[in-house]
Length: 92
Image 1 (cartoon, helix red, strand yellow):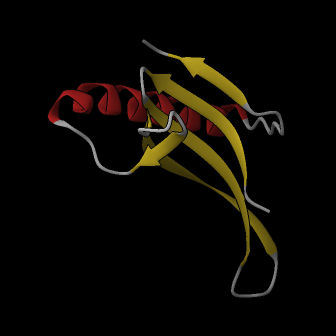
Image 2: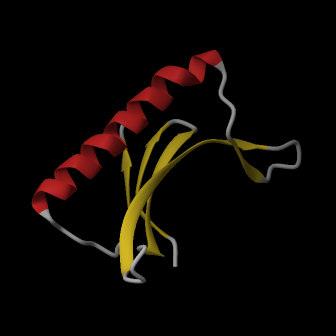
Image 3: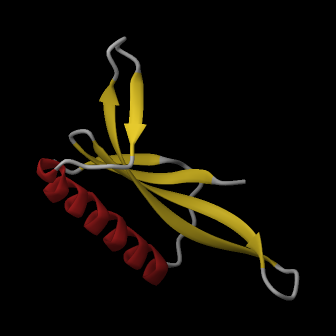
């Protein structure tokens, strides 16, 4: 089951690290991580929505949260830690 592991947010821009499971060629269950990037906004009725498109002014924040996600994954790989608790880090 795919579940969020860590979120990095800067304003309305959010990068989420996901823990995934799949099967290798030999049928073994393997874990792997992916990262999604989205812009959160409220629609005209006040409901929260997500978009995968970004304005030019969103790009510096998108770059920042993706860099933080990359750092998290690299450091976590070196530490060999496995956590099942979703955390959010506000970076800006």
